[in-house]
Image (cartoon, rainbow, N blue to C red):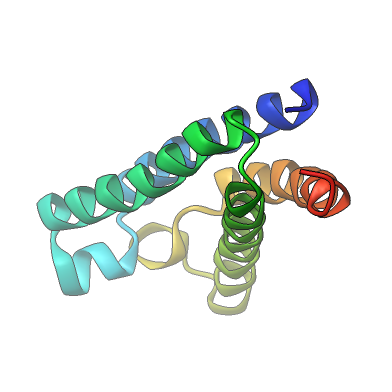
Length: 124
């Protein structure tokens, strides 16, 4: 597997974790209104296990893992975009759509990762 892809994927995982912490710190509305902090963190931890599992198979050059990693990177790009658009549209960060700062990092890391994964998808 390409070292650049591995580094970008690991960065995306790091920024994903930072994003969840930012959501908790900023009191993301979904956490406050629906789940509560405990359930919100447990759900996000479980959701985080999926891309870690994908990474294991990505390291083994599995074709399916490349497609799943591509889907993960696109989801993270969309996640970052939605947080920032919603924060700008509502003007509410705390108790609203917290996650915009790390959302920018998700976008900036997810875009080149998705581009590289798209480029190698048929060669694995």
